[in-house]
Length: 379
Image (cartoon, rainbow, N blue to C red):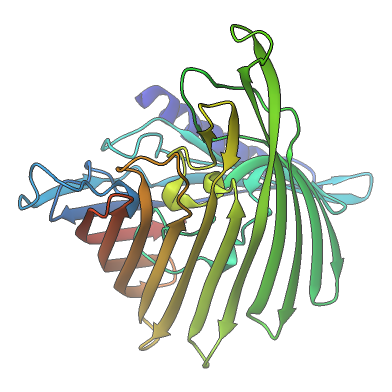
């Protein structure tokens, strides 16, 4: 495991040194941070530094056995690239961290961003157009505010920039998360997810973004005339997202996001990879997209130049269908409050309390509590 890490560090260092010998048409800037994370759970949460209320055990075997989890795998390395090509400036970025496995103290290098931008085009892997990183709350938890559409995806995007406004269209890599049985087979997707977004800015720090998404979910089902054969079928899904960042005082911010529609589970952080895009109906002869609604509200207050706090409340609600079983998710709630100390712009220490609740279709519910600390040095 050490070999790829050492190789990456040497490569970034070599790029930075070689840039000094290149003509001024090329600029390379390494960046990143070193972060130590400490997590104290008051019940079993899988030794993960991601707080996911949807995964709270209803009947934990060690509900009253607090345990500690330490990790530095959130540490990050990146390289910003700028290059002149025939008089046009191209910007790019490649970035990775070591968070390939949330339940281990260490991990392999994981690709986060790898893209370039040229004359309005964004090509490569970066944040989905169905999200805006500027609306992200300032928190310790690496997972995010449960209902957040925090997602990086390979894409092709074009952005029309106007004074105070941006209109963007993107084709994004399709990935389905379907709950099936043996009778239905998930097929490889043919069409990319299509996202259209509008962003309006006012003042220095305020914005609102609205996005719409449509996607196709393909699957194979038993043919009517030949039950042993499979026929291809498809289901259309989609929804809307709205996010905002609003400066309320000289130093405080209100941040929020609302997302809703059908077949959008892959875009909601707290329920991703749990199979809630679509589910089998009528003895699994067809699929139905599952309705989902998620939202969060965060308020960031600065006590002084070096001290700040953020309160976050969020939730995800799953629309129940007849095919749901008793242990399927009904809704989950996420709440957190923290205190950050930043003695310098590149150094910070944060302490956070997190609370989560989960309710199943059967009516059973569970709760979880966590204390989490992170110390970060940026470069």
